Length: 93
Image 1 (spheres, one colour):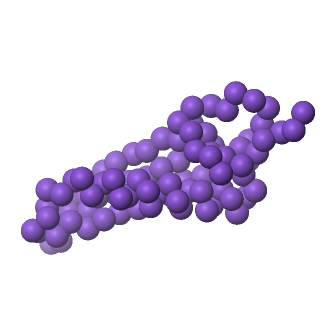
Image 2 (tube, helix red, strand yellow):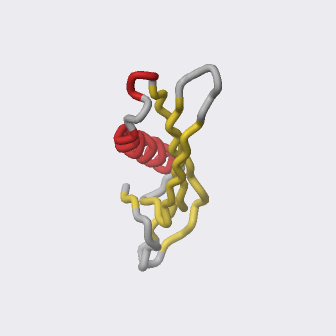
C-alpha cells in the first residue's frame, strides 16, 4: 500500500474516495501542545490504509489533509485531522 499527494503516472483504475478522521483532546495543562498533531497524521494515514486495503486498493493518491482546532466552551480544545484521497488499483498492461 502506497500513499501519495500526487497522481499515479501509470495505468490504474479508480476505486473511489477514502477518508479518515482522528482527534486529540488537549487538557488545560497542555493547551498549546500543537506538536501533538504529528501523531494524528500517523493515526489518520493508518486508518486510510486499512480502509483502502479492505476495498482492494494498491494505493491512495492525491491525498489531502485538513486540520482544525475545535474549541468547546466547557471542555478543552480538540485537535482534529481529516485526511482524504483517491483509492487506486494498478492495471497490469
